[in-house]
Length: 289
Image 1 (spheres, rainbow, N blue to C red):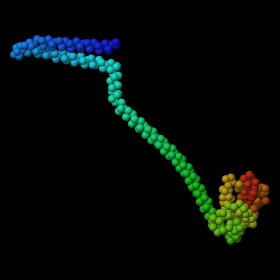
Image 2 (image 1 turned 90 degrees about the vertical axis):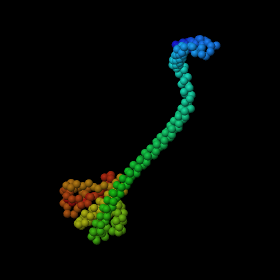
Image 3 (image 1 turned 180 degrees about the vertical axis):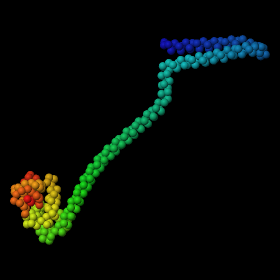
Image 4 (image 1 turned 120 degrees about the vertical axis):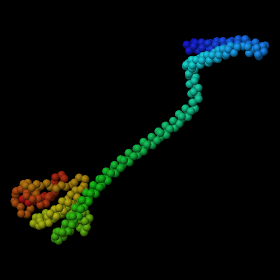
């Protein structure tokens, strides 16, 4: 038997002895009272004696209660008693705990579902943000292209108006190149390679015959449509010939203009020539020496 079991047994025996002692004292006190004497004779028993016996009885009961309380406290310290009390408490609250656990599981499921929905919405938002970014890039590209087209169109309008101010002879000569009577038709005709080549030949002939009064407008007209034609290809097919002032004149590269020296350095570029992208000369530049 363990120490706690021994203490409980000893306490039980002490209480039992005290109860027996108390019972014996009460029995002796009762025996002392004569059974056949009149009530008046019984009253001869002194009040003090009764009071003393009563106080002893009360005191003994008090001690008995204290011993019982002590024995109960000792018992409550035993592991088996503690485990039994826990079982009783858990049995009483099991149903309530089960309900709380079930409620907690339901809430966890709802939270998990909401988290999945949030993640799904975040993925959708990310996709929309990518789409918006791509659309913004396209809008910026188209806007820039539109601005360029507007600038090109304004330049074409200005050139068209300048052509209208040319002399009648020049305008009549250009009718074979620029047909129609609108800016749109003017542009459509101007960006065709055959018309660009014909325009360059016309300007060269005008320079070689000494008619240079309108050379500035005609040269601007050629350079504008030459650039616009190259824009129609991802890789330009032609490029302007590079000529530098004070460069030594060479017959194989350039054309000597009217009123030029036989040889020497280039002093003016009257009309730029052009070559293919691989370096083959198509039209020689017209220069003055």
